[in-house]
Image 1 (cartoon, rainbow, N blue to C red):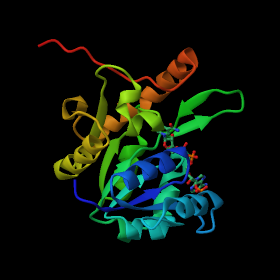
Image 2: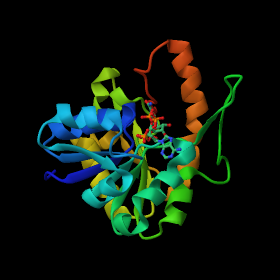
Image 3: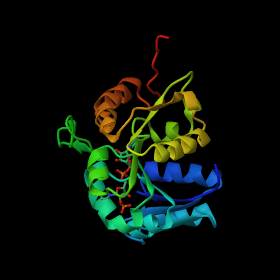
Length: 221
Ligand SMILES: NC(=O)c1ccc[n+]([C@@H]2O[C@H](COP(=O)([O-])OP(=O)(O)OC[C@H]3O[C@@H](n4cnc5c(N)ncnc54)[C@H](OP(=O)(O)O)[C@@H]3O)[C@@H](O)[C@H]2O)c1
């Protein structure tokens, strides 16, 4: 795909991993945080070279032709409000977040869950933005390097806008995902199931002791 300006909201491990990969693919990237002086974002941009920048969530949304939401799920709506509806209007927003709630006793739950999802909440709150839920079911290293897991295994896209899903699919293919393993689950409501995979994913992580695993479906016919 042609080089783009891509804004990543979130300077955690997911944001940085995606940002590094996008730079290697020739894109220009801004990594966004609440504050422009965020030390993680500043250090990343210094190391990244001339095509890597950091800024506020608003700078990042303004910069991106395509924007990725890699913020803490519980605060994703606040982060996107800081990014600004106007700057996000008309753009593809890849929503990677999971609305996990961590209790003091180590229990992890989701909010929202079951009859709603953060992907849907974001699409409702930003109706002019073309939200595509993707990548939330994988560890950050596997997102950008599917060969870390042997054999065929799948990831998913869900959203209302077919053109937006095609753009995201092309981006995922450029990461090394075979087209046949990128499964379109339909509208954004499918984000419910994708987010609800996370408690199971966390159990698998504890079981294996690492994050180099993924879902693989055997399908008849
Ligand atoms: N870790 C994984 O492998 C993985 C895999 C799949 C999906 N995910 C999901 O991807 C998202 C990012 O994960 P991560 O581990 O990279 O992120 P993280 O470190 O948990 O957080 C990333 C961002 O959330 C922002 N943030 C934190 N508190 C905030 C608040 N009160 N208001 C606004 N923004 C706030 C931070 O802003 P500042 O930069 O200003 O600190 C930071 O940029 C999460 O939703 C996670 O569930 C993670």
